[in-house]
Length: 485
Image (cartoon, rainbow, N blue to C red):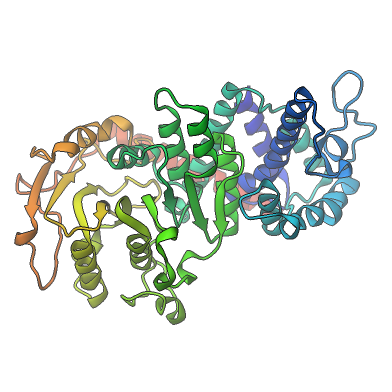
């Protein structure tokens, strides 16, 4: 049911001159979804208070509540279209009154971990891009049909929202920025094995995929107490995100997964001097896929002992410093990090090997990240003791990865199974730290069992890929035609 609603919303936004891409569709549905969720949350809190004989003070003033401006209902429980605004009246109310009102919540909030603060933060960044008030009315009517009441409904909504993020991530150049393949994230979590009571962090959280998957992993642990569930809600998941759209999506994604007031901060993580990180700021588990290929300014580089413009290298330093002694990390990084000969790469590998136990390197083939052919590795390490031995696993699923052939959980099952014992296999081997060149600290992936296998694509693989690319081209042309009209 919800799937068709999401599709209908996208169809309406596709026709609106203010929304030109998958990114816009996701952003605009996100802020409306958030307000619909807030309405459901207020209703739940009011009912809880009534059962306890207490008075509930609503977060939003009545005039700005969903049931007042978006979906006033008649006696039959359906939207009263005589009372509901539409057209220019609706658009002008949203742009001139609603969003400015919601933005002011940030100043009034008691702290950054409150839902009030999140409201203010989100609506300080979001602008309504839906130019037709009639299209806005149609989208609101569809959003109003969605329900957040049961866990089943929330689960379905979170699944559909993840699909939207995936589509947005595959829409072009922003692929890896918004979407890390969930099977890869789940494998990283299974290897790091977070536990209830540990603090989990992603300083470049994007759409919060790592934090949402870690929440799902921990929530499925047996015999969770009420105290455990409170700990998961309030004192477990922490993230930072620089970009406005990703920040909003991260908040909404975590809310749909079941975290009411996500501890996500909208900030440039790299603007913080890592010398200022104290013990209270450190985390037990860090899971991340930091952006790579970026070029940071000189003043940002001054915050780090190893000076480099490469964004991912600065993040790696931040993560090492942000880990507690004994803390575990799993970080996605470009595979050239293992062998680059520039001073920054060599210095950073030295820092990693000497301050952490880099116990596992997962080598991922090109195509693991859809829309990005770059080859990556995942570094698994523990803070506080030098590296003694590195176990390598070369992922080879026997096929090429692509949009029609994405990575799945089965592809990583052997890696997850072999990793705890660092077992040797045709795809895995170990290198003693004493065998690593102490001048270059080269960590290249060199499989002694025959190297990388080149998988030839079948004719059907090629045809499927062509069909997917043709469909994508047709979507792009449709957008262009819409802009030209």
